[in-house]
Length: 436
Image 1 (cartoon, rainbow, N blue to C red):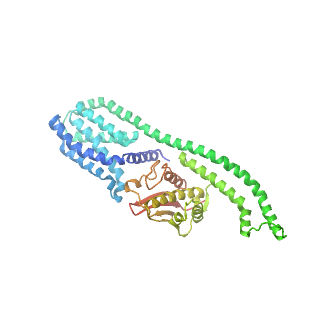
Image 2 (cartoon, rainbow, N blue to C red):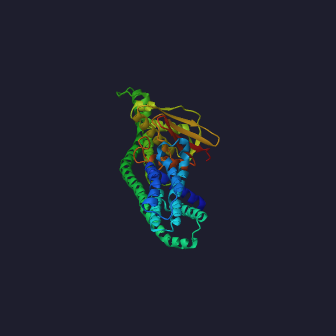
Image 3 (tube, rainbow, N blue to C red):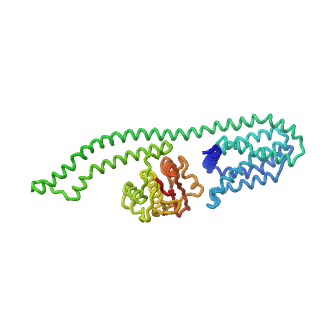
């Protein structure tokens, strides 16, 4: 992986986090911009006159803020463009506008303080120090370019004064980024707390499971002989209690099933610990598996609380496909998606859940669709973020769907969410063509 690609992924992740943390404040940010841009034109022009003011630039800033007022009601087709809009909004309203006005006002104290405040707001809005530096640098350069094209002032003298103020602006960015770093530490502490709780639970569960597995070793050795002895006693007419042939056959296989369930429980514990730790997934045990068999086993083992819950989930055993990976991990993904869908449908009191498969040339697809209340468009893009949770998805810790994404990435596949409020929620997983 190239260094450029690593930086690009870092910036993309930082931008997503910035939008994620700021989305609830977006309308208020819009209100603040719409009010303050024209308000401070009046303040600096009439109450405390400054050397320079520019009404068109302020009106442009006010207009740019208007879409934030309606952020929660953006059409779904425009949602992918919000990250670009967010960067342009911050670029214009903070580093560009304030740098330009600072230079046009000959680096006055008022505008120097205003520029520091703008940079502080930029740090709060973008969180990540690298993204803050890039946006601040680009905006400041554009502000300088606009100044050079519209002013005949002594640029050498202004540049000298500006360079003298740069350490103060750098201190604002560095200091603010350090404080923002605490938010990242809090997130990591939450992950560590989940992992610690998971380890404790795993220890408490594995001890009885180990005892049960030791006990089944005796069953595996002697139970088939006892079943044979019972059948011989029945044939000999001895006074023993009659047991149906089907029950006897199940008894013969009981120890194997118990061992299988114990192994499965241990695997689930491993997956839960992996989910809490959010680490990479080992691929040593990956193999070829049938998707239909995986779905069938997942539905058989899913802990439905009633027949009504079971009836809400439908699966038409369609055309099968083979994938390369861990069937238990994929089962865990299906568990999470069915659990979230059931929660949504049951809480809304209406809707059903349908699981479908669709083989393709490049990718094979597995989808889980529920016709419940749906997800707000502003939240769809964040459903796979760590600790993201809402009333309709990923109940509890907010780790389930992020782990599902981790699993799909380990299979070189993808998972996406599509939803329409009050209509449906669709999770679609794409599996690459299997190669052992």
